[in-house]
Length: 241
Image (cartoon, rainbow, N blue to C red; front, side):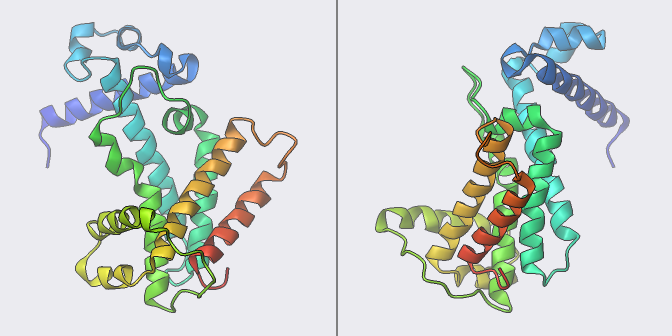
């Protein structure tokens, strides 16, 4: 159990990040300032700099928080479905990602919008960023274990992409218990790439909606994300799609 000092530190860091999140909504990532955050908190800049030495450190904390919030929303929605309802779990993830993005527009823009000039994301952001992808991969793996994926006439993976597919399988294997990896290793390369394509399609559609690119193109956007969930699930081979 953390001591008093650790709890106080965690509470202070959470408060700083919450104020920074409001500043992000008001001024955008480019206008984020550690000094402005400290003024609102009534703290000396030197006190905050112990936790966030510069703007980039604060941006990283906001980015990780956004990825974690998005991942948590997707996991909560997915876990509310029956374990064997693979299509229901898949659709729940799609709906949850869109709902979170609509409710947290500025945070979504921070992680999937225009890159912040001069900012280079550290490796700390990689694991939180992979949450939704791993969730989709887990659903596909569970479906492959039973009742099995539906065979479909997919386009073979080009040799130049095979190394990427192998690397992504290795990434997922590292997150799974040993007894789960057998099903994953049996996935066809085309299925693995289909999961990556589904992730791309999901965030592409959500980004297009949030950033105005569907204006006078797709107006029934909730219905569209449902359709996209089913079509991508079918390409992966999720039963019932």
